[in-house]
Length: 532
Image (cartoon, rainbow, N blue to C red; front, side, top):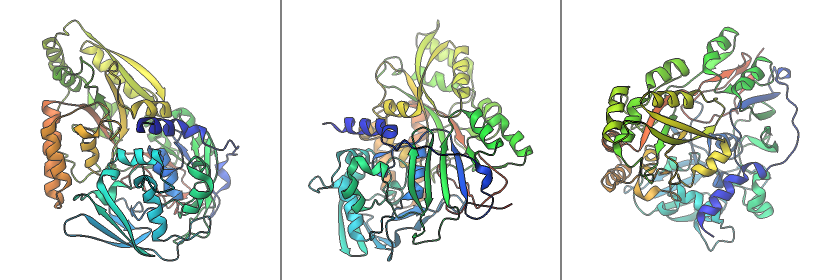
């Protein structure tokens, strides 16, 4: 069976593999240490097996249950983000950047009571690396091939009970952070749980070492966790953590106003000021690695014409989107290096709003009388304001845009395999703290099923620059290389239309304390508590 079937099957199973149990909601009762914290999510999450899932919503839930060897410090709003030891207390990197040796934390247990050690780490890596291992899982192999972990890693060796060494096939100075992103995540699952429940059962029995434990999931409604009282670190402050799925923006804000949830992600932008006036706390982070962008389909004959792609970039009024739709909770994006990476250049500008130039380019391309394009869009808890704005902007220059709307998990299922030839473009809101995420969306060797280059773009000369950046130890030198490739592609052969960098607004009940809106796309809820 081909890898693409495995990935597709796992994405489709996000809702099907869940417990159908009811959860009662009522946030007002929790007004002291302990209690229940309810978080309103803008979309449902995929399955709770971190090795075979994508998306920020799944990452946010998995983050509370599982842990990695190292992790981004989400208790700080500082940028660039810093790494901290999690299941590893320290680590060393060889001079040539190919060997990573981790000293593991002693005295850690999985929430099923079994011990964490180097064998558990090896067991998890072999799940996607070693076809001869009994726990090898083709779906996990496909997912980790998606972020090039399979190609990057040469071997994983147990040195002793609490030391493990990972050897790479070549230098990669972004390796440590790669497994901490959201598609997939290199979290350590209990080997005993994998043996007991199997690959199909783990999403219903997710067992990690994190500060919370899984209780139940009601698909498209909620997921409930409870505090792990045997956690090795600082225990979570609330007894229960509930993620409530509220896709409709109005429903989400009404739930907050009614006291049914304590926090909501992506409150309607035009209502944020009113929520603040009502006493709700509005948080944001301007260094979040979040970018909303369009991808062009290079398999489609119309989109192969660079003039059409440039015209679309000129036709979209990003400044007005930031001001009149986002109400200042985002800023225009001009390149595909997001604001959360060390390679981001805030001074780079590619296409400013120029509808006349867009019309000129379309006429030169032979479309003076107009052009019809199909645009795949997602239902992701923010309504259709942005998509319809873009539709209107493109209409002004003669492009008739048909919006093909899909629910989030169905959209993701179609997005991952790459655009079919008949689709002209699609959208995504994503981004990672690694600039290699940008490269993987553009490199010739990262088209599906081995990466997120879902628009099938290819420029071998730019690939060489991207690879050189990945192998460069000096971060400032690597940043310059990433910027060189990104700016050339944007100005000369755009594969995307970046629209805005998002500030990730979250609205909190005034009783909530201990929440940090870190420069990430998921958050740590272990320190959240209440104060009258």
